[in-house]
Image (cartoon, rainbow, N blue to C red; front, side, top):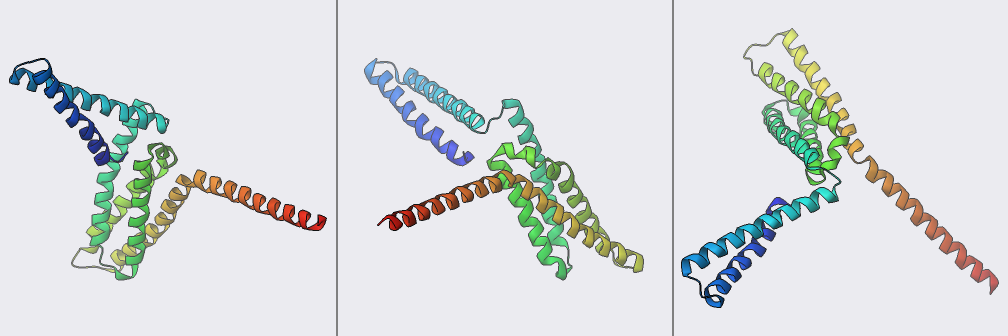
Length: 216
């Protein structure tokens, strides 16, 4: 569940609970205002905590993850987010206009991989090559390119290095595209299966109609 939506759910339940506990304590059991307030806050806090635990348990169960696995994935996603911020900053800083479209596409693909993994953490295991190899390489190459291209005086060797770096980034982008396809591999297979079932159903229905028409 979206973190903000989960927060709203917890508050939507906890606030009425807090109010109900206060009303029952103050008017129903004739407790003091201070005691009723303390009791209601304790009840609201407990309710908030129970809902939080339940939502997290449901989330882990739905994605077939243990707490340890989710913590491991989340730590790596937090690190990846920082690396992607560095990557985007470097890509935007590059002033080579012909490669602009390629750089925007690289940003789009990496953002897509991250969002898919964030939404469905179990996909992380299908994207390990991206998070542990290709993302690091992209950050290092782009930051080094920005540093070298910012030098006031260039020579043939430096220009050649910049050209080779752009080519390598292009190849790396293809590898990252493959990472995205790897993440989506199960979805693509499932789609093909459903397409085959639908085609078979349509073909069976068509044959049945032809058979009925032939009998008339």
